[in-house]
Length: 486
Image 1: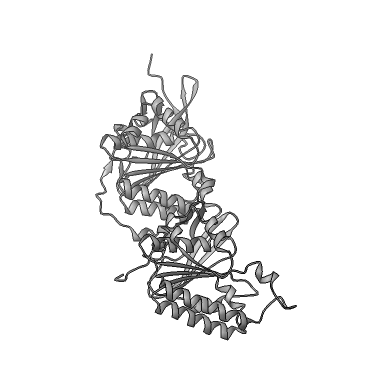
Image 2: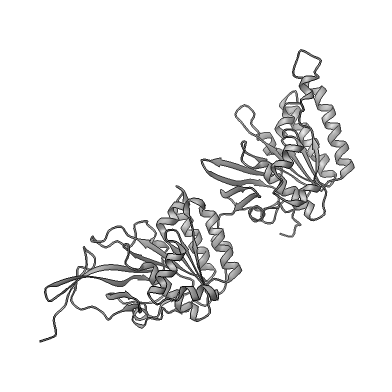
């Protein structure tokens, strides 16, 4: 950008703002009560104090004592913060010598203005946070006067070398369009149900990341999870085939799955989808590559134990750092938050294979938003970074016409591998068995048939092409085998 930036103190928000605030300008933070405006301001001031800058908190609502108590866990640097506490005290009511509870605006505005001027000139702060500008509105006789006063006030702070953050609480009775117009940037905080979001609608002199970004408030402050923009990330990689280590399966796939592709592994419950995905990770571990499983349903211990029972040494892989199995409770994570967790792991740990198990669990994390858009962004980001993606998709029907997925996500896939239950008829005996096939492969050709699949304590076994196969795409596929024994 060629500009120095002032960090907000929140890494995710700095990313949304493409580096932070432009110095010596004024920015509006707006939102209803409890949305996190004061918390954001405290992060902004703490970031400056950490760098040795002077910070000033001008409060017209909560008292200094309350603010220090409420943000005690946010940063140790806030102990050095200077407050200008202009909040009303009990004396304002008990010592009033008039029958009128409310003093004329001019009478109250002048001492407040003078206190601010004196404090700013004495401290010379590089960062100022004012909470909230809405309170000053009530000290103006009309909206025109208020606008002039705010403009003059912000210019005064800027000329003193300060970057300013100020808040407003917009309502139908007191809209803040004038403050949005005056400010150099606007950050909107919202709370809808149990979901918190942040969006930027204005940032003079800079680009910013559009859209609504998930946010979380905790005992230690605010976290912002920018929505992924896949086009902003690109890593050069060689799209070589990644083999499974099972010759018959690699024959079916004409070599394996290519690096940087998205593969949907689809099938009904219990057919072996997760185990199949872990087989590719087992082979990757042998090459020293790291893989991660994000499990929305099964516990980590169950997955590790099941792997050991089918000759996949998941515990050993985990101990060596080539495999990480992480349990994700979808109702505790937002989709943007989860995407940022995945992104951090890829960029910090060099992960080569990521498995999302499963699409149904990921849908819960989206919390009613569009599943396709969130999944698209995450998968395309991973593909751009050269990561091989495995999406586990469970189909509900066991004995019905073939359906690759039930979520409308097939367009995301470079490869679709499907597992099915089949009937095997031999000597008037009917057995339930498993089969594997490939429906789609973008970069290479593949076999257009089914092969038998067995999962035992010896591992995964894929057989030769099955003769006598009937009704592949309707009902349960049937294999009628002839008895070769005489």
